[in-house]
Length: 96
Length: 219
Image (tube, rainbow over all chains, first blue to last red; front, side):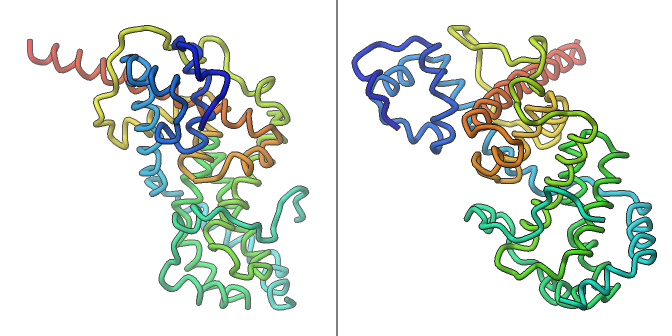
């Protein structure tokens, strides 16, 4: 991602970090190709650690897709009661 | 029961969601039998998907009782409308979208206005992530385990948690989240960024506490 207005100036941490939501939405730190931003990323230890951490958190979030929680048996009982008390569940499907 | 605003037809799905939701053995057959009203097929589909649906509800709501109620609602809607599932997207993607819409409707009924994230579910100053300009902090150790991350996500303010779960965990795109939450894509990006900043802060606090505990135990 290139931002023309930041090409020729030295960025502050605040200016760099303002751009982060768009960079991450565009694909993460690898999508940064603006020279001023790359220079800041290379020279600012704090911002580079921040970018690495945010990327790491986004990567780690994927492991949460695999579920760990299980509903109580009561949930299925109530679903069965709902199915039994409303004949439209089966009938509606059969009409299609 | 007809639910306003629920999209029960299949939407075009982001490619990433197909990757995240590969077909499950026995699922296609169970879907076809469920369409004919086969109660065993309903049971099979529930067994296959109950954990992910419940986990999604729990993460979005942060409350066991409400999460169970919404899981029940989601499956009752699923079984009622399964005839309209044509197999054009992954079944689990369709089910998760249905679940997310139900949960969001539930939250709106409770009075949580999702029209503008900035105005309504933006956390208080106390909950906001700290800015990180120029401080000399170390980075995360790179060994954050699932339990620590799960705990940190659970303690996020609701607005941050919602966008984080939808985007980073469930794989929805910002434009899809914007439609669901009735906000701009820019708002969705901004909330996600703040959510990750807040998570970083929480995870670092957790690491510091662990290290302090270890030191104390060693004394």
